[in-house]
Length: 438
Image (tube, rainbow, N blue to C red; front, top):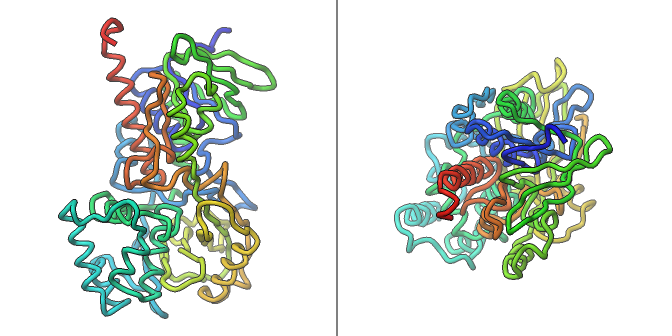
């Protein structure tokens, strides 16, 4: 069928898929992106509710790192505004700005053992031998220095905010590596169109270079011939279409990718690794609005002592376009216990609401827009950080991208940008190798 032959096929228009597609299109590949939803962004998209632009998952975009670099490289507009103060910490009845004081200021305010904790973090920054083994959780590592509930609460909520998992379930080695050696999300912002705005910008660069994005369509199967993906079966507009490709990239997670290819085309040891590491995290997000300004912060407010509430983000101080005139828009997030595995949804929602009543005066008078429970097949992250699969697969022209194949100690949309860069670099490198040398 005319128009069904592409250099590259990308399954899924989430963050990882669009970062990948934009890079491939920029490199001259005629690229097709197939997305089952009617909009781009996947688990980091936006839904309009009565004039409010409510994010479906990811709420912030990193500024100054690989995400912004990708937009610059492919020529996409990067409309992200940074709050005047990105993060404040609620300690007691005060909102603490640690922009300059950093860890030392925060921890010394929380506990007399703050200096010891700062020393432990500093040692991890300088010496690999100071990093604990994978078996030690972040909560247990903190417990070596302090028994303070407020200290444990801050670390738990930082783990939840970045990695969508509690400190009891995140390896301390991952946490320390991220905060001492990675970008650690030092600068971030909001898109005035909701997070979907940045993905629509990337999508525009794909179509501007001759690529296509098929929404409300689904890849039903990837077909393997002589050990390589050569074709996909796609349903579109009620019809079945065969799409041929030279390269295939999946942004639907390794487990779903195995299902598309068929287990018979993959070795047993790889399938077993996918089965073991298919451990999605969980998170709850409650979106609410008010006429009065309920949260006196311009960005995100993290908490030290709560039952579940990790943070509240204030969008409209920075991006008033996200709400109708005269309204303030917020989201509150929590991570359930356990964050990996089954939990009681109703009980967790009740705990989140109770925390909001306790910590946000006036919440009872606010308008609740939606409650999203992200779990199982629609998680905040497809794998616990530190336990990811590689982005390669046993099929040489099939790759995974996204938050199920993150690089070590990374997370969120930043990790998606990183995996996309690594995969596209390898695709381009393979293309430069003569066929007889492969």
